[in-house]
Length: 125
Image (spheres, rainbow, N blue to C red):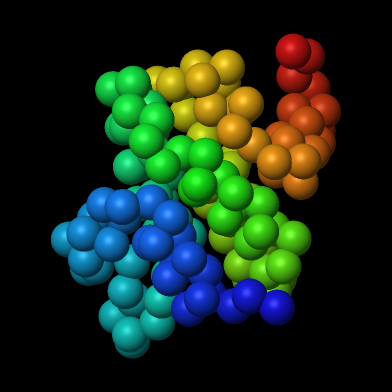
């Protein structure tokens, strides 16, 4: 099972610029007691993806979502939760980038989660 530390490494390798962003925002995602706040860390990735797609920059997007699918399939409960609720739902709930621009990159598991969330919320596409 992939755990949080390996998740961070895989995502930083797959999506250049993520490491620099999380270093710059470490005050936001490192708790006062030194704990790693996974959802806030994942927000940095979500925002970086959103910014790049808004600017039409799709470089490394396919590689990122391949890692995302791997994390959903092979991650422990904490990894799956932070990836699905932090990144996948983060993209699903933002309004800057149309779904048609990022949804094609979703793997089977991430897409199934989005579909389940849409159904739960009564969204008809």
